[in-house]
Image (cartoon, rainbow, N blue to C red; front, side, top):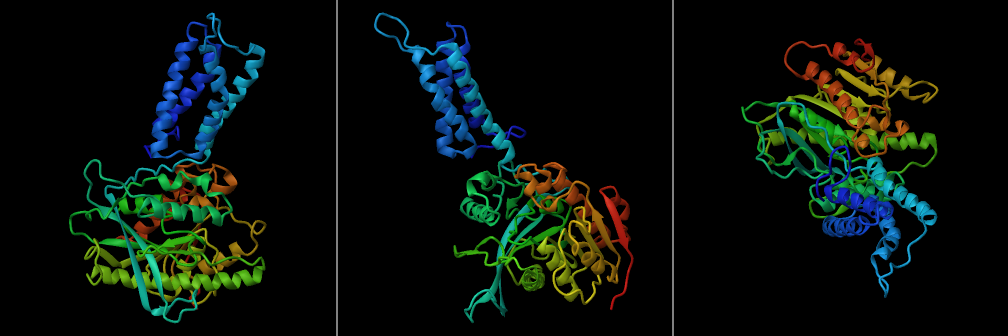
Length: 484
């Protein structure tokens, strides 16, 4: 797919097809001397652009444009034909042609409108001083059975994607595919995510076409420094790449982000042997039963996070091959997550003191409330009230108040649940779905607040993130509480 023009949400061939279609409709209303030339030129542009799109792949957003071309073509071509005796072929009366032209222009307008509503995501340029590299690993825990299958020999396997500070790549270096290592993987994951939320896959067919700012396996940034580590667990059914914009921004500022796929929970996980593992988690509709299931799934995720934390120590020590050997500062590690991943981060931190800080991105704390947290914690949430969810806010507040370290809850104005992931970059800008911060500002705000907290808790020297966090919303600070 050719590059999408920023702002227009269309590629150059799509723009040409759009212009050709408009010209074909408008030609009917031009002076007689200009009509043939404009019609022929519009037809040539349409044939050229259609050929290019056939080679690189049509998007469904162009179907209304092509339908309009099919409707208007007979009427546009007819006046060019000559009957015997030199008289022009039949031509519709203006009062008949006008409604048809207006209808065709309306169909054509649907194309760019649909491209705007369901765009190919354009990722914000990272603002840090580092370029960004990315690497995918697959690790199996030999000591942990896979609880989602009946095979007693099956062991828990996770797929992890790392984003890290890298050297600047040469011009023309291929940027990493979004949602997967290959276009096939990206399409598999995109289709699975669409099915999970009840959307037909074609609506988001632009998502697997996207390219990010990272370069696969780029050389690690020079200087020999070691980088703090941030683990990430996605939301229920979510995938490791769902917060790519956020991960790239953190990596550009000197952090290594390790995001997990959770097999049988994530919508689709493509393993290195080509197998695709699809989600087996589903709610029952019974609130108490679903809470019990969610607690179980959260515990599996928390164990995945602890296992990956161990693997990162091995990667840094050279026991596992990878580009980051000797460059990970695992003594400074944060654990984060979105939605159910946020609950998993809280649970993992309760049981594993190797995590030095916790970030919960709008995640309800599933599972037991004890033991208490012992790490600085940041909870980023949309606006919560007892009316919208009577259990969420009391449960989250309890977890933060019992923390033996300082905790922060930041309510981000204009945020919705999907604000805290990449959703605003490619979903329709409906405030109830993705919030009202805008496509570009949403990932910027989430990354900026995260960086303010991480810089204060993981970087050397004293730091208090409160002043920086207050600029982004309503901040509640919970001092060290009862650590029973």
